[in-house]
Length: 369
Image (cartoon, rainbow, N blue to C red; front, side):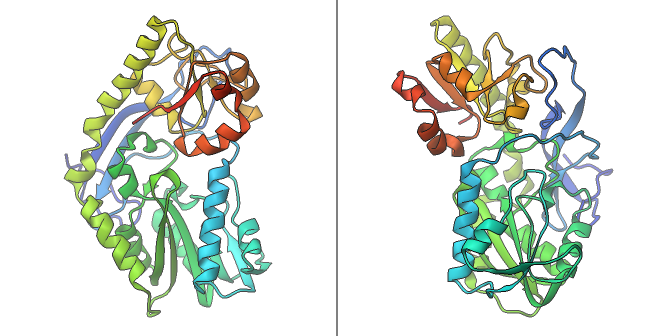
């Protein structure tokens, strides 16, 4: 359906389509105390695809409280290390320059990996122009004014400088039916073709891009001033994503048809496990877990607890539910038959850090998919 009241966060166009509607959701970052009975405040979650610039984005205003208290997964650090290695080996980033990084609410930093790859001469001061500007860890997707955020980053580039942006690709979200990646606080969902268009509108050219495996498809893209020639990696990735349908409202909108079945399948699985007397717990009090649990109507009667490595989340509850957040030690102490993994990329790390689950004949399974 088409709305006549929504304006694009980047180009200002009102021509677009609401492609996914998840109803009203609680903030996926503000975890109430376990003793807080709620109800938690909720906000509309609608994904709107701009017809003019191709940016997918949350349609509604962002007045959502955020209180980020998570710990960064190892998978994110590994991805940055792989990206930094690619940037160094390809010669895309001249070594020894000044680097400016935009902080992210997700925490984490590119700086250790860039140092390891030999790409940092020094860290630029606040507001100082830099040879390399890095958009933190999915930092820009939190900006309400997308054009202002990108222009600010572009303005800090020295002549010949490079901008590096990283994003969980809309192509991966569509291809893998990751509808629960759409959540409050994450205002923009980039495809490579849309990012190329956005960069062009602020005077930058995409010169290289690479798709990494994180979250099923995370793109690291390098840009420079317009007129700098790129390589065919950008065109190749853009064509692939266009085949996926990232610019087609109908194709992106197919995500909607997987929302109810995905949520219902999880609830049915938990009811069946309860009927068999099995202990099922969750792992990863992540933002993407919130819309899934809320839309599935899952409470502590079906999922007694969700474990998380962040001590700051312990003794809190999952937003919009009565499910408590517990420590990994408590998770292993309860000897679950099954652990629902809300962030599949954590699996390798968790198998190493929590061998007790599988040693006790328990299993890890993805919560969606």
